[in-house]
Image 1 (cartoon, rainbow, N blue to C red):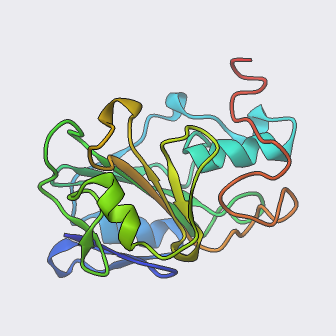
Image 2 (image 1 turned 30 degrees about the vertical axis):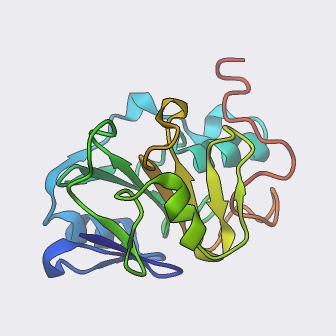
Amino acid sequence: MLEFLPGVGVALPAGAGTLRFGMAPAEVRVLLAAATGVHQAMQCMSLTRADYTELRYAHDAWLSGLLFDPAWTTVATFGDVVLTVAGGGPGRPDRLARIGMDRHRPEGGCATPVVWDGVDLFGHPAQDVVSVLPGPAHPFARPPSDVTVEPLGLRLHRPPSAAGGCWSQLVLFGAPDGWEPCCTGTFECARGGDALVGIFR
């Protein structure tokens, strides 16, 4: 199983070590080498800081997992969970600050547990999971089915078609290093960020 440790990172399966916020890219690559399906992400599928004229749009792209940095291209697969990593934003891209996890087959059950405090975040109905998370847990602005749990540094996602089902994606955040000039929060750009401004609209 993958165990989420709030403020620390993620304990990897089979005693492979702990992926810690603040790690350098080389440290992360060494740690993830034990995973199956480790590969380099396709750079053409992501955007760079240079694609944005305003920091708020870059921040929103980082929150959404669209922003690309050459140092952070490692994607690792643990069973049916795909794990991605990202650095800490402008001026601090050299330290791990964002960990994403996606169920590879969201329509079926999740064979690889992603656990916080004994709760399998992907293995129980979405509302049951939210009911045991510490507050405040509130809906995120886009889309309304997402939930942000600021005390844990956690955002949960599920596709709109999975009403009543389980979460299929989550994002874990460390400290909001690098985005302070944009806004004080980690989870949402207070100045109206939009990751697709200047790109598709």
